[in-house]
Length: 406
Image: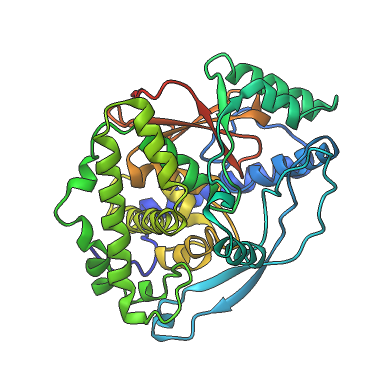
């Protein structure tokens, strides 16, 4: 594996420029109001989120949850020994946003800044187990949930109800996922474990737990990986700590996959996602696997090997032109000041070797209502299903837990 310093040149570079041009063309179409009839889920990765959330905010008076999230981009430069990579960083900085008035049945805000989340963690540590806030709420009838959330008669509310009605044809219930910027990881992992019948091949690899040590020996900038807050942690301990997270992921996946009864399996998942220490450690493991996958894709592209289209889009962004920037400007912020962008849902799917099927309710009556990450999955990849109203927050549709493949 070679050092990911810069993007390759030649034919592959031309292909990236074409991908960037596609993104710019789509952005222009939005500005002038021209609809795009060929907007694929991969090419929409960098702009459709803003469109959906702004549209939904128009109807926020009828919906009980949601707070606008705002980020400012501050351009800075690395000053340590890795500055020789000319790795310009655009660091998102959370800013306080005014709260949206909620209805009488209001629930917790879905989108909060890092400071607010940290305050809640401190509060939770002082509460008893019985008062602990669930990461994945108990299931409820999906149409009852829809009626509670979307009571207005605006076009957005009507579209959402139509979307939920379509989902209800295949899923009877929904489980609401806690919205703390980990929701995409939480929903995907919960569904994967709930359906797991065997340990994935990549988790069985003998070198799996050596991944942090191997990567750190090649890429010094990984020492700047942002782990969950832990007092007294030294920089040299990062490799061992991530290794512990990977070991925990394999252990939990193995234990749950060996449970035969669906009720017992579900109870084991519920128990795991009530344990804050273990739960957040698993998310750190997933984020590191995403970084490893990004490095592999980057190097494959640099060496002239074929890579999926989303990889070009991932590294075409000004804030993630290489794995170093991806880590600093995106992966390090997941769970703190931001969640997964749509193009990063592709990366998560490739890291887990799972197909993530998402009902995108605001896309009802379009070809993108049901989106697959990736959109050309391997036949033997298991499938997990999620629901989103805005490509930011994800919930879980519930039915009999049977792992299927496309």
